[in-house]
Length: 335
Image (cartoon, rainbow, N blue to C red; front, side, top):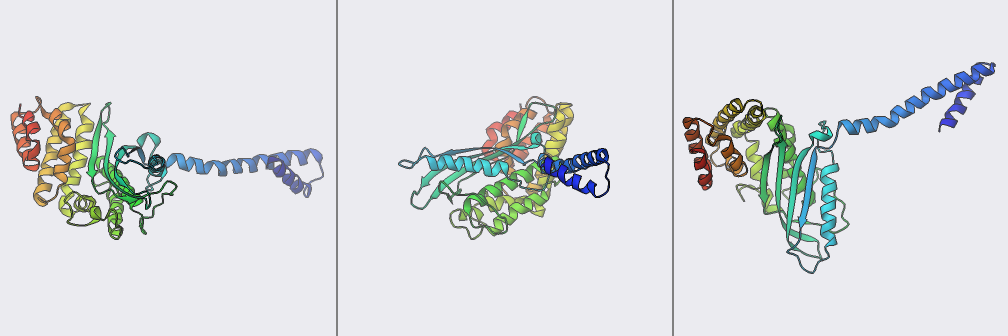
């Protein structure tokens, strides 16, 4: 390539001068200038990739121990394909540095698999977390179990996704949770910061209504904690205080605790007032209950032996109303 550029430059200069030294120097100048431009053009895509790194850093596991008589290669291929699909896809137009990628996990358990059709009946445990500022502690942002994670997959299938035209259960399911994870994480960083991304998750629900294998999780009223219910409640105007609660709990509370534990805990106490209001606005929503399930131990550790008697009592009453099944843990807060 460089030889061609030098040759073309020489031809060009020949038309302007007869001096040999001038010809050589002008040709070299053209060569260096053009080479710089070519190098810049080659590096621009790489620079773009480094600025817009993928959003997710996901660990994927596929457990098929319950399946007998099936070649395990199909499940190994599924695990690797999903790992690549989740971690190499650019889900949004946002810029994430490599160290800012969201840590998450997708644990799939195969209950049944039909070799002839490729249909799989499965469940999914999905979880995401984020680091707490100025500490080595990581905190769970979202966690849920999806018992209706059914799909079709054969060993050499290519995983593709388009939110506007959805015809595959597997990629629709994964994409829904990818956008949910990113949107919820953004809500912990800025008030209502994940709205646009979460709207994409809602679009996926709308466009997945015709899917058959995973149908139950996409339908309204089938389950108070299914995929439809989670995103529908999360974006409901009556639950806006729940989203504001996320920001105050994480960004103004947990992120401050390493610097000033009392100030951080006070902000978390104020945040629970937002959770209380959200529950009063939409008492049938299961989001507050879901939150207390995966944050139970963390909440107890924040308050046990540290808060005032009034704070402890008010928090115990709120948490008991939201999730009475965890009262054994909430009583620890009173000590």
